[in-house]
Length: 349
Image 1: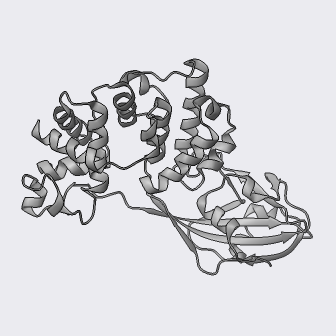
Image 2 (image 1 turned 180 degrees about the horizontal axis):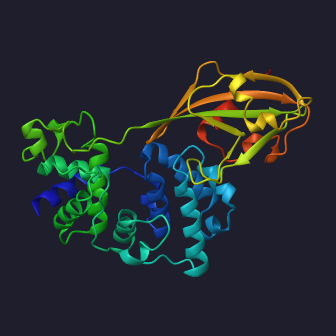
């Protein structure tokens, strides 16, 4: 097929030297695909290299402690990926004798692996003819063929997968899938693609009808909600603080944080001290309290904005809430708390 031959020719000339391509084992490809979900390659590569260095085999990853996995993942976000990664590593190591399934159906039974990741592993590692569909593939196919089905609709995935499977034909599944993803990542990019140097420009619907910025079509997202987090840093004279583990099914699941008071809006200390954290605190233990950031810190997530205040509370004795910590850098924490810990500012009351 002419289209596929053009794509592959472009790929062999322009593909990047990515570390998992050096040894495309099921473990390496699986690890890279999980990391690259919701993450750019430029951001994901350093994490991949750190993880593969510390856990060169899937058995090493399986035997790691959960907090270690969360710590090395810190900063990548979407921490459920790390938890699923750990559970799947254990399952493959202990129940499947370290051997990855080769079929799409069996791969999809593993925690954290859907059709896209299963197709990537199966095609690249085992030569299974199953196309991948990610944001890059949506963009390339919607632009070239002028497909206006919203890519976040229930119909889109199957429509684009059928189209990609047809284009794959009897070509090498590994090369085809990597080629179409690579083309979307470095040539048919979201904004300001260099269409004049595109090998498909003559027949690309988007280019020839002025719809480059219109395609792919995406339905409007739901309204982003706002949340207000007040992190309370109880600190004694030994510079020890209290940390709690987030166990609720919410953002930052199983990461550590300072005691939290969530409010519907920004609040002052008079309102803050009405919370049970302060009501249960012996007044004789309270030495001093200070708001560390006068301006709210805005932490953007895909579906919500978190407005954050840090409060330092100097106490004689730490309240019995969670664990007592002195070396905060040992614990896996949300990015915004990591920035506070690493800050060069001396937040003294």
